[in-house]
Length: 481
Image (cartoon, rainbow, N blue to C red; front, side, top):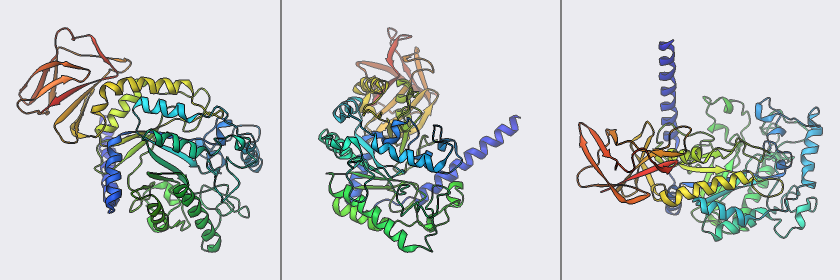
């Protein structure tokens, strides 16, 4: 059994290394100096807010995916319309006529996000179901349609309201946009009922229809790029909409793509950058010129990637609003942020607004708790970079961009909120050099004694702090050269 476990570990480790190597090989750094500058700035922000919101929040279900005729766990349909797919789709689309989030006050969201230390926001302007949370001229399936009761609200153009409010607080603005559109007859043609997430007809037989879909998509993105103020990130989802030449046959999900779903990203990106100079384009999972940073979903890489990246992760279990969702603890979220940052990434943390237009109070509470920690320790998060040995036991390492400060994050033990320090902290293979000062970030009047011996850094903790709760969730030791 031990040999089997060891073999599986080696196999997993080898696959992870190969996957990371392939990712790095495929990544193309942007050549535009304005994009390079924006990307460098974005990498230093470290912490952003993601929001999935649409009519589906009224049913408290997964966003869009229950429309998809695939036998997957997240596609399950479980209500009175579930027995008949076409009746279900009709009822789902009819949610537009009851969507009325009268408690929508994005000012409360930006206040909570800013207090938590978040620096950028990405909002779902349109998910795969095709319902537009902005005032598009290309379809009537939108929040500003007179079919939707919220259309009479002064803030009915939800995307604009969110972008304006967050921009005033100096957040970078990101527009999530789904390339596939399951409501459009140009993508899921009613003549051919959909069999899976992909386009429902053979593009090679009906190229004119696909050409019209490309134009429809281009026009919607152009609206977002021209009528919603400064936009910093175009975050494109639905990676199966891609040129067939870009398909990686080693990825199971991509093997099912039979059509050349080339959406003409060159034209889209050129238009976006003509309207929004320096904008970051993130064509998720389609490696190359138009994926300025990569976006692992609900996961954290095992080690630094060496390229720009962001983990998008839910605060609860679901991307969309689900009543009584299970929210991660403040300890889990702060440890997650530290883990990601120490590997050179950003954390895009998702909260799903309710059908009434607000967040669950638990989400506000989590952001308050994160904010208290960030006010003390934020300098060890922003603009930080990976630092070997990256992590040892409950310690994680990073450095400031100029390398003049090194950070040792000591995480609270599992099941505990507070950090308790021993008499001495020993770190093997971590050299600090001569003449440095080591202090606790939240107790900067406390200079810690230390020595380097036998290849180890030994830090001595003052007796009055030994065994005492020094801080919540994680304590940061700052090494100053």
